Amino acid sequence: MPDFRTSAQAARLIPDEATLLVDGSGGGVNDPDLFLREVERRFLTEGAPRDLTIVHVSGMGDAKGGGIDRLAHEGLVKRVIGGHWAWSPRMQRLAVEERIEAYCLPQGTLSHLLRAVAGGRPGVISQVGLGTTVDPRQEGGRLNASASEDLVEVIELAGQEWLFTKAFPIDVAVIRGSQADELGNISMADEGLLAETLSAAQAARNSGGIVIAQVRERVAAMSLPPRSVRVPGVLVDVVVEEPEQRLSHATRESRLLTGQAIAAASAAAPMPLGVRKVIARRATEELCAGDVVNLGFGMPDGVANVLAEERLSDQVVLTVEQGHVGGMPVGGSDFGMAINPWATLDAGHQFDWYDGGGLDLAVLSFAQVDSQGNVNVGRFNNRISGVGGFINISQGARRVIFVGTAAVGADISVDGMLGVQVRREGAPKFVDAVEQISFSGRRALETHQEVLYVTERGVFQLDDEGLRLVEIAPGVDLERDLLPIIGARFRVDEDLRIMNSAYFHEAPIGWPSLQTTQYRTC
Image (cartoon, rainbow, N blue to C red; front, side, top):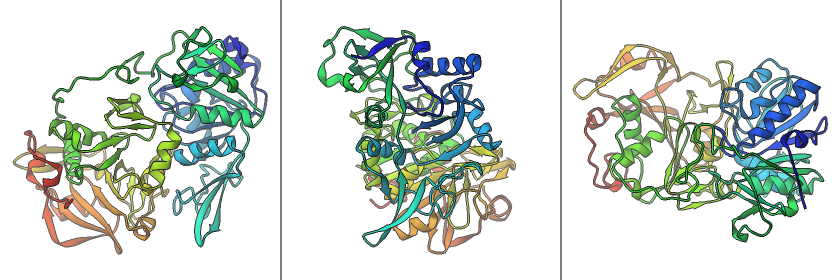
């Protein structure tokens, strides 16, 4: 039987120099925030625990001091191994200032690593990350000079190169659920996703560590339907009750986002006309009916809006790396959840599917693109965002579309008659060499991926010689609006096309089917 304790009592169970795994996702989704607040309070008042290794598979926080940032104190934390860092600016600052050892490994690799720890295996063998920042011939997942230990190595197996990420024991796993019965069985019925919760508990318990579960309420023994129990009580040591537990930082509760209610079909409010909509429309042209698709965080979610406006949502299957299949992914700080999903899987199983080639298409954002078609989303302009699931998704998909504006901070108008007009130029996002490789153009060519880079000014394609401009937007002058801002080397296609003028008008495109779009042969 587990102990039911206060958050203050539970925080005292973390010893100095422990490896602390915190399960959850960005924006406060599945975030055990009460417990993390108590760990921070204890350190600030008592100076303990100290020198922790913090592990988090997904990005966690609210970018305002919550989540993992509650642990961002020099002395409390010694090392951080995270899949994504964008939600934790205070922890980023410690990494940039070399006050902690900082690592970033692919979200899917970390998800699978917990299963390897639970199963007593030496680590994860995968080709995910070859040719990118995770490859030890580049940074090996290190984010700063203080990170000196090799966590990843290259091995040869069955005549191929692989990356081997070493397993390590978990001393304390902190997970979150909805209800705990008096036997410690944990239900996640009111959570927005399943994350790695079960794997985290199994990894800690089989490491000889402890499992602390934060839940909203305590219920009678054996009152939870067995099939609703995601973590059996035999794996749980301590339960902390938090009656005020929120679904996310943005949303207190929602039966739609927990899959307990179905949203009625309705016409989606169209996106306002602008560069985001133009880019989303052009990316949508690449979809085929029946495609299994992942839409990344940020600008890619515009594709879902365009599909809804054109009443084509039912022709593709949208998925989220946190485990949802089907339905409509949610954006913003509720990212990772979905409305009307067909199914919700543990994140590790979703990444099995992704890594093995289950995605027909991925639509992802970019921060930088270079002359070789490499893409950077992880570290730029002294910011450490991390890669999250980006490497797994971009490497595993058969086709990849990177979407974004050609420049940061540009003032651009979109007009049905004039097309694109650059009123004030910005800083280039296409450069000769990216600061960090999150997606390898060379690796994409070796694996015969189809890769496009869609901007509001034009569309580039990756081929054996690098970037090739295949389309240009109406109103854009190559000499005036593209050549000065595209720092990457590129060639202009002999049959350079003008982008579909319908993208630049308020009215819906009116596609009858994704099989009949202008550019894609399905």
